[in-house]
Length: 276
Image (tube, rainbow, N blue to C red; front, side, top):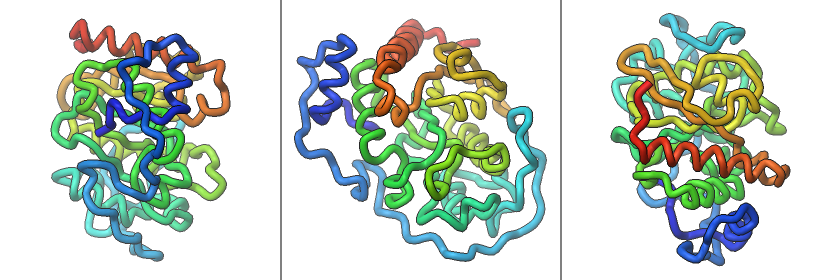
């Protein structure tokens, strides 16, 4: 879960820059170190074995058009669909060798947060350097900015949030995920969504938006919502799309756009317009 009130002065300044009333938010002069797990995240995960085994065999999965075929899944799991709960999925992701990224990671980053029917599932594109070291998503400056964004938007039940990425492992140099990387990880994400059954999905960035919605398009075409994620079973889940926090750190002109996107999500959630 994301804290709603402990914001660092840089984030307070960002919120003030786009016209958000920040008097109700408390500043936190000393942010939590990236390597320290947040409340409710549990103990730090152990290091991943350097050479995990690979077991052949896959079941059919659905991924956005144009993505390559998935590679072999993790040991002990014939396919992500065989994971009965999030704990099993996290253990399988930790030793996954479905793509070449497994040989470059320090830790896989399955996700963290409210694991029982969260109101919001926040999906980013891929782990950064600090995420890779901690085994937890949205660490460092981008995570603190995301905290500020979600707190400022005052999302209804905003404390009920689960955080994850489309691609669960970092690549050396932080290169953008390839279609093969995304195809290899897409079954893990689909299974996460099926297990979590969130009320809303917030996709951050073009890669996340395309993977969650299952369509192509530029981020400018996909921003806002509602779009929808169609699970293998159950009702469609409404999806909102905005910029990823890491891009806002280097392109300040997009901050107002991100604010409008989140304000739209908050308004839709308050109105209860989640049905599609």
